[in-house]
Amino acid sequence: MTPLVSVVSGPRARLFACFLRLGTQQASSLQLHTGASLAAKNYYEVLVLGGGSGGISMAARMKRRVGADNVAIIEPSERHFYQPIWTLVGAGAKQLSSSFHPTVSVIPSGVEWIKARVVELNPDKNCIHTDNGKEISYKYLIIALGIQLDYEKIKGLPEGFDHPKIGSNYSVRTVEKTWKALQDFEEGNAIFTFPNTPVKCAGAPQKIMYLSEAYFRKTGKRSKANIIFNTSLGTIFGVKKYADALKEIIQERNLAVNYKQNLIEVRADKQEAVFENLDKPGETQVISYEMLHVTPPMSSPDVLKTSPVADAAGWVDVDKETLQHRRYPNVFGIGDCTNLPTSKTAAAVAAQSGILDRTISRIMKNQTPRKKYDGYTSCPLVTGYNRVILAEFDYNGQPLETFPFDQSKERLTMYFMKANMMPFLYWNMMLRGYWGGPAFLRKLLHLGMS
Ligand code: FAD
Ligand code: UQ1
Image 1: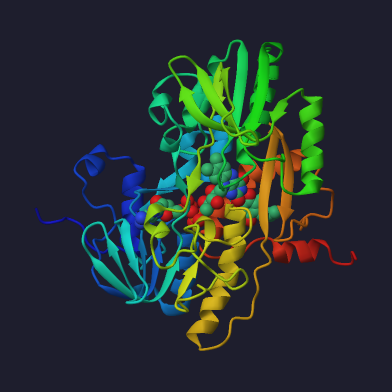
Image 2 (image 1 turned 90 degrees about the horizontal axis):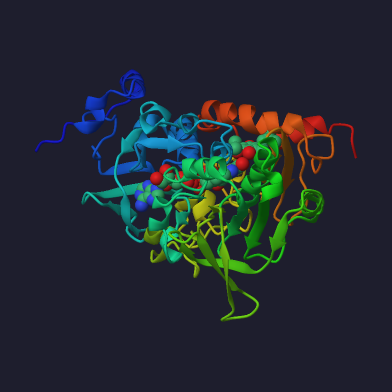
């Protein structure tokens, strides 16, 4: 069958975006125009792998550097997700539909969207391969493939999600199950887990615990709930200032935190979770649950693990200040798929996008990169339906706060920022390549302060 797809950009792309937004049944069932191409050209000056937070932001910036015709994004998904809002979707404070737009609507106009999956990288030959058999070459490559969710590494998952009482804010498929489990809670253990791997947004596994506690209080069920946070880590949060604030909340709200406990099995039919004690190999504990929130193990995407651009652990091996690849000077990495030693968040991606833009611009002019990434990352720790502690810090784990007040205090204003301002900023500025993080704001708001 001849594919009905072709290269679509500019006004046509927007038209298709509207078309998709209308949710025309036919469009999806017949797989008509999606605005994507099957790769009209086989060479681009800038090729971006992944159309998530980092990929779209960088494509928008690269379009300004080299022109839309010279940029392409390879991304298989028809929907682009604003994942940070899933914390609130899982707690019933936002609708799932508010977390996505059609991918076609976020592709910068004129930039080519190749709707495919990357299956192989060949940086020695400056090309990649896609799952539909195409070889695409590039002058500069930006890798923004995100982090992979490994639910299947827990025995009993992902099939366990077919049962009630279990959810996970980390996937579009399971986030609404969290809200369902929360509403269905009657009496017993509400368990929240943190895996024994790197994760994205390391605060999210506990944010949903605080929200659940608040929900139980609101609905008169708090006295019937035994709330347990079983984490593989040995600490509640990596930065002392925020860890101290969280520990106070944990004590105040009577939450049980158990360290070095790693979820290894879910017996969803019996509502049982099995944990291994990481300090005592071989020792396991079975806990029954009335509600279970799973944060899955995560790893670098499979396509990267075995590729020449990976470090020993599978992450894209980049310079921590310039984001340029350590061995391939025309290759760059951004976001969750890299080995940047900072917390994996969209806030970090925003800050990285500004730096990487400058790095690439100088490389294109045969100049040495100058601007240095300080590891800025941020985690709005949602501690209730109207409360947020806004953690912001750098590579050294030192607080790097934007606002001229103590951000380790729970605040309504910061909740408003997380729930309403951030999504607006993400869709309208970051994805258009105009948000490189709040450094300028921090400097402005701290003028005159030592
Ligand atoms: P992603 O945005 O995940 O994009 C990766 C893209 O690569 C995806 O579109 C994917 O389809 C594509 N891809 C994967 N494999 C292939 C392939 N083989 N070929 C082609 N394309 C591929 N961050 C914050 O800053 N603040 C928060 O409050 C916050 N809360 C969060 C809460 C939750 C529940 C979750 C899940 C995340 C949260 N984050 C938060 C983290 C944030 O969403 C991520 O860090 C950010 O999206 C990372 O951007 P990225 O571009 O690296 O990866
Ligand atoms: C941020 O820049 C960002 O990226 C768009 C987020 O992701 C959703 C955040 O959660 C936060 C907190 C920031 C930092 C922005 C400010 C204004 C402090």
